[in-house]
Amino acid sequence: MQRMAKTPDIPDAHISGIIEMALSDHVSFTDIRTEYGVSEKQVKALMRDNLKTGSYQAWRKRVRTFSDRRETYK
Image (tube, rainbow, N blue to C red; front, side, top):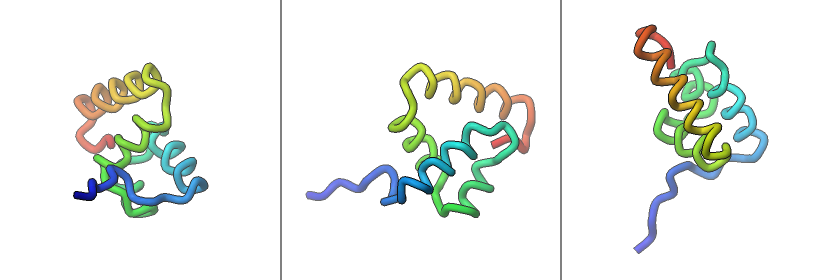
């Protein structure tokens, strides 16, 4: 049985762009989906796989905190 990858095959150049966009407080998951065709869940998996654990946890905390305050954030 073959397992599905959490993230699609994405070129390295796109991974850098997605990470840069995801780290920005001014770019939403919808914007990332529009430009690269990856879902919020896939962005989170990509970030988890490419950031250090502490950096990923800090990013997730920031995304959660901002999204609680602003309805249209990420």
